Picture 1 (cartoon, one colour):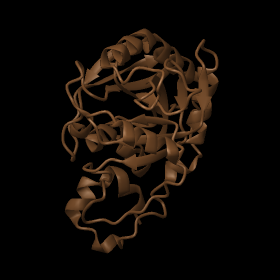
Picture 2: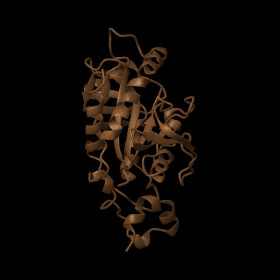
Picture 3: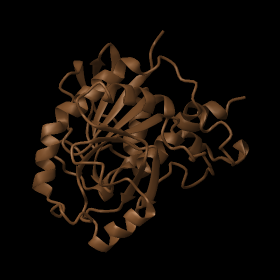
Picture 4: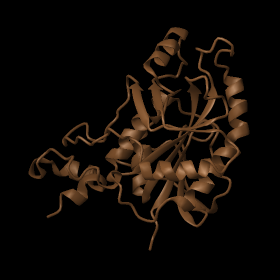
Length: 288
């Protein structure tokens, strides 16, 4: 039986997967434009894998400039079913230390100017998003992460800000009052689009700093963050390598059928151009 491909979106510091075998570079164009970079395909622990550096190799793209739709659609085009998102985050909790791994299961959106849906015209779609992380994929990642030397925190809320600036001290303290656990700039609308594309999605977050709320720690220092990320790239790759063989061969989770009851527009009212543009996503539900 052909096992579903695993996609990896590499965040700051993770621009390549060193342990991939049978490596090929694939350029993809989508109805939503060009992804952040070429996709790198290969095999890892016997599983077909597709890797994409979120910010492009050399970190060329700021968070607000990312073409999230093209990135996710491209993974779908290449046959990916499972998406592991690797992200650098700031810790909003005393007990989440720089260097710890966090597997958040909720998101809170503080972005302002990002397109967060494939269905912004011609077709109305409302997917369920109460549980934005695939529990099956998160469980596999948790089992893998606990086999490493890192401290792992399971669950929690990822607050996504617009960036590219880090938070003010007032913002950081208010966010802490909200009860969030980590803060970053990329995982929304990524997670929303993955759900609309019926892809299973989970985040491996690497805590790099205490944002600017922590009185005994220095304010966010980009050099210190990059140094820590460089030291932990191998840790992230180890987690991914250990996760791959634990990802199931087939899917039965709600993610895989997220659009089944979510397309509101009557099929006969969907323009042919929209059916062509969105066929990869909605095509299976417009037949017969």
